[in-house]
Image (cartoon, rainbow, N blue to C red; front, side):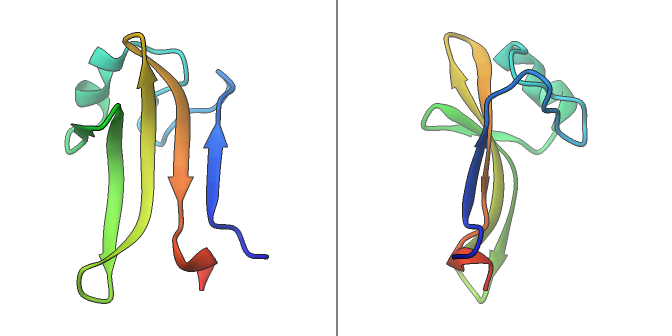
Length: 79
């Protein structure tokens, strides 16, 4: 199979803007200005492909006011 999703839960992982697993959720808007909070996660970056079909997405999963993991979704298994 091809890579489709990944969840990174170690505090060693950081985004391109410096957001790390374990940081307070309130830090997200300062580091990722276009991030949007929805359904228990901050969507940090996404791209729409082929019209309205969702494309690759990077999110910060939140619990208890902290980033608990970074989530990557490629979609279509990288096709």
